[in-house]
Length: 96
Image 1 (cartoon, rainbow, N blue to C red):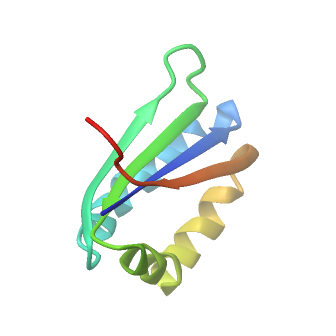
Image 2: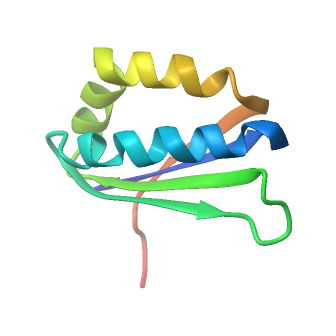
Image 3: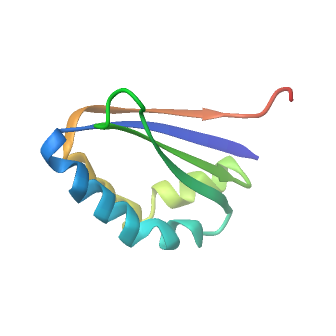
């Protein structure tokens, strides 16, 4: 299993647009093969910073999603709303 964490920093005037995009696409993402979880978090001190947190069966499942036409279309729209370039990490569970 792999966990993907993505930090997204939006222009303040684009926050509601991003929230609408996430609302409209979250179920499609959750239904991709291998997607086990998708959550959205907002920074408590800066409301223009969001984090997506997703879990995938395998790294191949995550890569298949990232190479999909759906992802490419949504990402192209979303990244136009950024204040800063997104940061992303793929991590695996080590210890609980």
